[in-house]
Image (cartoon, rainbow, N blue to C red; front, side):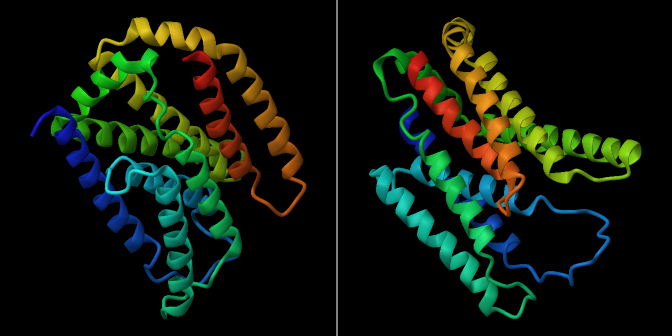
Length: 250
């Protein structure tokens, strides 16, 4: 197999692993909810991130070349996944809020499909393909993503608990996901010697990204007065806004 074929093969392996892990995780028996849980799961954010990643991984497998068809397939699976939780005797019920969070994550992450397809990003695309054609780099990416994410999540969770008496789990997960994502991107940049391209792009992204952060913060604050999860809304705006900023910079 050539470099491109190896990369696609590894994308498929990553998708299959993530699909199985997510399907199992969402269908494990759930304990009876407690009024004072030891750990408050960032449930809606998890749905947003996990199903969003599932959609993006699937789009890179090349089993389906149309991004709209990829979106439709994963969006349908999210409905099936939520519905089967209600049918099976695992103490879970169909949650419309969980489904909305998952569908929003799918839509947001799918917007990044083709982000490296334009001519100005050809060198970055070729370098990334070269990096991802090596299986050992996938293990490094997984180790960095889960290792950094878990350490940051645990550190923030225990800090909030110690100093405020509250868990603030959604905030801890929100920050840990952003930090882990940044570390993965930094690994790819260093591995591919892409500093020159990254400096040029990030310089052009500063203003639109700053506006995105301000808007996401304002929107999250406003939505906190509604029944919708403000952290999901904030994350969605950041993901979508970052894609818009990327388009303007490239």
